[in-house]
Length: 370
Image (cartoon, rainbow, N blue to C red; front, side):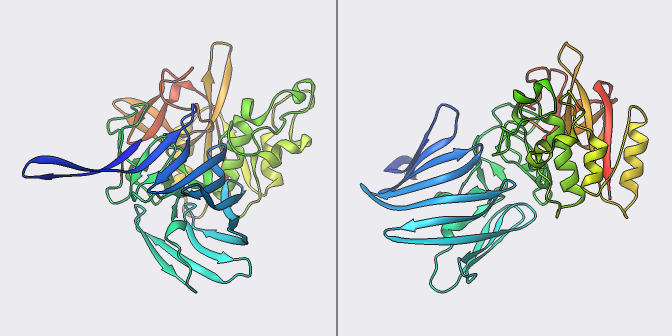
C-alpha cells in the first residue's frame, strides 16, 4: 500500500510524491511501515504486535517489546539509543489505551477518544503521547488511519476505507454494526463484544493441550478449543474481573471428562463462580427471560451443526431475531474461520455486520449468569 500526496489545480491532478509505504507478508499482516525517512518493522504473536524495531535512515532509533495479559497490551519495554525504559498502559472497556505511565507510576500521557475513535492526547512531563494512540488496541498511523490487520479504519468517518474482503452483509464498510461503544473488531473481519476477545487458533494460549485421555497429547485449543474458548468468553462477560482464560481452563485436566477432550462445562462454571444451564429447546423464551431481567448479567452460547460427520461447533450468541420470516442467532465467533459462507458455514448469513446462524441448525443453547 502506497500513500501519495495529491490534489487538483484547475481540474488537473497534481502529485507531490509518495509519503508513506506499507509492506505485507504472505499471511496479510503488515511487517514494514515507511513514513518519510522513518521505517518500522513488526513481529506478531497471533494478531498482536509483539516486537517493533524502528530506523531513521539506516540507523536504528528504537525497539519495543510489548507485553500482553489476556490479549490486552498492558505495557512494554522500550529502548531508544542506550536508554531502556519500562512503560505501563491502562485501558478502558474496549481495550483502548487511556493512560501511559513510566516504570515508577508517573503519568506520561492521558488519551481520550470519541465514540468512533477520534483521539485527544494530554501530555505530561515533556512526554509526547501522540504515538501511543491505540483505539481498541489498534495502532494509528501518521495518515490518521487505524491499522486493523485486514483493512484500515477512518475514525473521522466511522467507516473502514475498503470493503469487507468477505463481502458480508449489505454495507461492506460499516464498523462494528454501527455500535462502537459495545463491539470491537479485532481483525477487520469480525464483530464481537470486547469481553469476548478470545478466539481459538489465536493468542499465546492456542497451543495449550486440550482434554484428558489418548487425544490429550495432540489436540490443542487452536484446533478443537471452541467450547473452551467460548466458555472463557461467557464467564468473562458476566464477571469482567474473573482471571479465566482458555489457557487456564485447558491446563486443568480435572475440567475434562476422563479419556476425552470434552470439557465439563458445569464444573468449570462453578469453579469460576457463575451459574450455568443448558437447553435443547425453548431458545426464544429462555433468551427473552434472561434479557428481561435487569438484575442479572448473562451470556449465551450455542452448539451449531458442523460438518457431515455429526460434529458441532460452539460459538457465542448475542441475540435471536426474526429476519424475513426465519429465526436466527446473531453469533460471536469463537474462531477466525467463523465467517459466513466459509467452510461448513454455507447456511450462515450476515446483517448489520453480525454473523447469523439459522435456529434450526442449533443443537444446544448454553447460558451463564450472575
